[in-house]
Structures are given as C-alpha cells and as structure tokens.
Length: 119
Image (cartoon, rainbow, N blue to C red):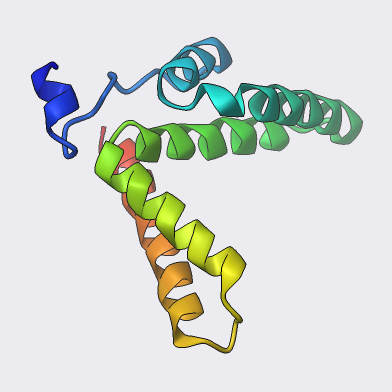
C-alpha cells in the first residue's frame, strides 16, 4: 500500500485541469461509477449552451465536476460526503441530523471551491 493510500488526508490523484478530458480522466480514477452521469451532464450542458447561446452552462458543468472530483480526491472527505448524503436522504428534514448533514455537504463543497480557487 502506498503512502497516499494509507493516509485518508492525502489525495489519491493530482488535481486535474478544469477541462472535460482532464476531469473525465480524474473521475475514472476517483469515482468511475459516475462516468455515465458526467457524460450525460456534459451533453445537457452543451445542448443548453447551444440553445441559450451562452457558455455559462458549460462553465457550470466544469465547476460542478471540478468540485466533485476535488472532494473525491481525498478519501476522508469523500467518506464524509457519502455519510452526509446518506443521512440527508434517509432522515426526516425535521430531524436535527438532517440539518447537520446538509451543513456538512455545504461545508465540503465550500472547502473544495476554495481549494480550487486558491490554486
């Protein structure tokens, strides 16, 4: 086992460039089960960009997947996100655990966006 695999706070892959091919290659390493979802969303973003004559849907697609990959690159963060998402799906919104889970999801996404913007 490598040092990166032994430490959950170490990234399992380098941060990719924010381009569709680089993000797809990184996703193959950190969450290959999400490739079909990414491909579908890319097609939707291109269609919307064409329809609206705006690049904003493509920029939003790239940012969304850069954030998802930034979280998935770190096993501990990915595990925290999975746990929070599971809680958010399974508990009643009136349960305080639901709010805690949503706050955790928000915090992880915010930290990932900050890390990407600091780079």
